[in-house]
Length: 509
Image (cartoon, rainbow, N blue to C red; front, side, top):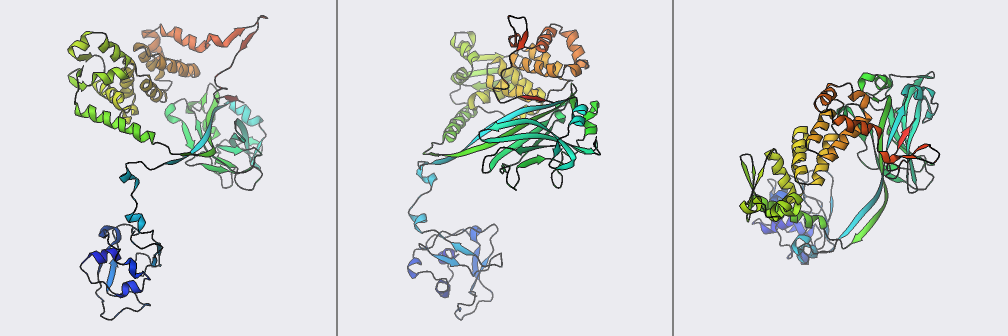
């Protein structure tokens, strides 16, 4: 405000500096006018008096009109100077404003003016993740026979599920349900929570998530912590459990999901007679500091931005992709570098390399456009994955021109929307374009849900139109032959690998 006053044509009040304890030597150095939007505008007060101000009074000659947005602390006072504002402020309380050295304004430059050459220190958190499936078979019998009391509340029972051993920390996932007079209380909403059970000292910080699976993927119940929670040591009085649990003080269940709905086969919560929950947790194991870190992400983003500008401008483009009536101008060297299909096409002296035109048939033009964008920048429109049709079109284009990372993203989106009604059709499409990755995901889903899939009309149509796929379905149901080994005594044994080594396991009750 003082700087704005000095830069204007108004006559400053001589008492303004005397009452604020500003050294006289600092006054000539105040030379940077501030934006009126940032701090408001000093205007002559209607109640201005000609007499000097006394220290006990506010200066009547000028008033500070409140700014249109939050005030910004000015950066113009001499070293160690601080003022206690008596100007008109939005708040009725007096504010103490600590101001930095004038040298911060005049003698030093921001990192932006240094071309990003300032040393950088990066703090990096180390986390360990755990994910497992909790499967409860024969739910009614399991819940009825269980006697483990939940949270010292005799009105609730709990089943202990997956146990995560992460360094010195140990966490258990527990499924909670209600009882009344020893019998199941079926109208009571159930719950899931995470409990820390190790004996190590100090707090552990973790995020957790549970996903209750339904036959219809669109009905999955997914609940996750919005922030890292502090799990205190089990021996302390502070919280060592977090989640959605009706046995907690005050009650916090999974609203709308009770045993009546779980046991009702038409609701879809039982799959092959089992209740299934995916349990995940991520625990902070420590914090590391890295000095003089180059901003790799910024550098990589700069490359992507440059290639996007090259694609948009069409400068030096030497190849045309003809997709239906559309002509997309591209750079052959970029496509050859990103796709082995284009590399072979343009390097082997084929017709396309001579006429500088590639005719693309049986592909959607928008899918090809997004594929080209992915080749240049590694990005595409995220809304493409929002519906099955556009996702499948993009997957088909990516599969044809050998972009496996993009195929993986597309298949992940499609498989997340699998249902017992549409998985047979998806299998036919995967077989039609010969996409083995997507085909295997379809077969795995069918293997898990086969009793329900057999009852659908889409499966009947698959059998009628494409009976050769039955062999693949039977093979998927039997499982990989490499898992079955015959010993010299003629006994069949199974070698279970993969899930346990990767941190995933099935817990069956």
